[in-house]
Length: 283
Image (cartoon, rainbow, N blue to C red; front, side, top):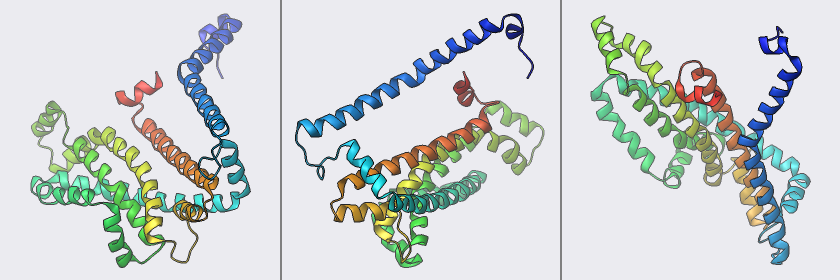
């Protein structure tokens, strides 16, 4: 790897400046959350001991860790099932949501005719829709994926549609001046302009797809197959295994954060070279 001008002139100074820069980055971005997390864990560990709260009411972090280790085979299998369900639900939300947005944005008549129904679908509580989904698709995996899709669908549609309608007027007039067709304008102007909005919708949808999968397992059951985190939480609640209940909840949270970071990484890769929202992350 070629040396930079500073490294070639003074390698010791360059190494020192990199060390200072790394410490500054750690202090500005990571030190605060790490200290807050340690304080939170400490308080969580101490309060049940001082208040003599039994572990089936409020387990300590050590109890939760011990439950996760002792029942790791159950927890691992549940995580794998939920990941698969939420991943398929999220992909369906992304593909169908973006396609629907392009269709809605292609014509005002289509948008005025269909978009209200998307809002109505979003307004209906999942617990009211879920029994219908179970009747149509049967109990188990298929219904859980459909419920996950339904919850993650609307954020993709609403954000992408907003982006497709937020085109710079001067660029739009330029395309009119060159007599671009409707689909040329869509492919070369409106879809690239909507990319930041689309990524924002996908970030919301990816976390909601996990919520949808877990909620779907409550309603649609496991259908004779292996259950996911929702099923594991239900069983743990019935058996009053509160530490394992907390372990499942923490696993769901970690899963959601991992999905969000993965989609954010994709968004940064796609937008980092030209859009301000992603370029700011690099500063």
